[in-house]
Image (cartoon, rainbow, N blue to C red; front, side, top):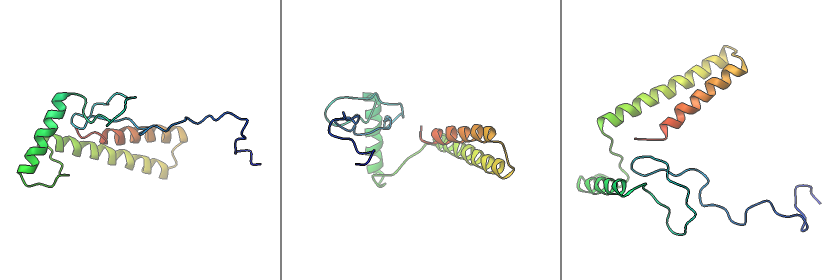
Amino acid sequence: MNAATPTSTEPSTEPAYLPRRAEARHCGWCGRRLPDEDRVGRPRRYCAQPCRQRAYERRTAVQRGGLPEDAVVLSGNELSDLQDRLFQLRCAAEDVATAAEDGAEAGELRAMAAELARAAQSMERLR
């Protein structure tokens, strides 16, 4: 018998159910993290009623404007912020690549990779 295969006398360490999502969920409007829920039904999309209302207003404005349903509308400030974060991400990636080519030590590369991960994480939020 394979050592990785549990026998019928060994208790199972796996949960009886698998959660719907393992990653954190965020508000569809403001980007705040939604609380983990153990309730039945549809998962929440917004953290509060005002966020839900703003999302509705944007959807209806997009429909009136003739844009596709999946269109993303950003203000000038949001676009500028997104461009800044993209630039930071590119610079961090270039720094890691240059340090690796120059033979940087493992500790330095780890620190730079952590900064790269932080920059990439900031890209996940649009607001």
